[in-house]
Image (cartoon, rainbow, N blue to C red):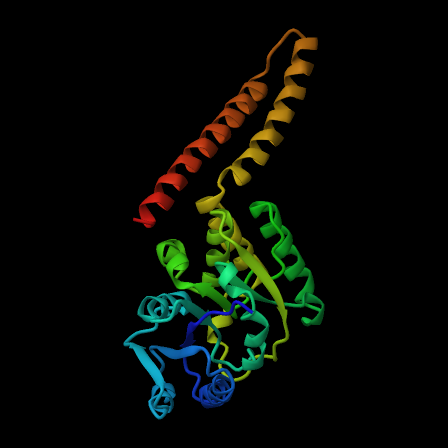
Length: 291
C-alpha cells in the first residue's frame, strides 16, 4: 500500500463547539482501526469566542493550540503544520463536512506523492455554485497548465518536509488550500487528486466567507502572479501586440503613424517588460522563502 507511517491531523477551528466533538469522535474511531499508523491530532483554536477549546481539552490524545485572536484559516493550518511531529500532515475542517473514512482513499500510495488532495465532484455541488466552480477550475488549469479537479478542497495529505518551505508563500486566509496546491504544482512536486465524498457543512461557516466567485478568482490570479506571472502578462501583451500590428498596418496604408498606434506599442512593450520583471521577482521570492 505504501501508506505513511506517521500522520499528524491538523484541524483549524473557529467557533465550532457544535461539531468539534463529533469530528474528534469520528476520527478516534477511525484511527483505532488503523493502529499500524502513528497518529497525532492537533486542533488549532483560532481565537474562538465560544467553548470550542473547552470541548477539545476533554480529549486526552488531542493536542490543543490556541490563538488569542482570530488569525485566519491559513494561519491556523500553518501553526499546526509547523508543530506537527508526523512525516505527513493531513488537514481537515472542523465543521463535519469531511468524513474520516475518506482518509482511507488517500493513504494508499501516499508515500509516492508530495500532496494528495481529496477532490469533490463538482456535479454534486448546489446548482448555483457549479458554474463558478467550473470557472475556477478552468482558470487554475490554464494558469498552472495542469488539471486541477478541486482548487480549494480542505481535505489534503501533505509530506511535511515538502510543504514547510512554502508556508511563507501560502495565504493566511481561506485561500491557503488554493495557494498550497499552486505552490507545489508550480514547483514540479508530485500532486494527485483522489475523488472523495463530503457532507454538507454543519455549524459555523466563518471559514467560508471568501468563497464568492469574485474573491476566488482574485485568489487564483494573485497566486499565479507569485508562481507563474508570465501566464498573466503574456496573453495581455500578445492581445495588445496584435491590435498594434493591425493598427500599424492600417497606418502604413495611409503613410501616417498615429499616436494611438504608438501608445499601443508602448503598452505592449510595458506589459512584456513587466511580465519578465515579475517573473524574476517571483523566482527570487520563491528561492528566499525556501532558505
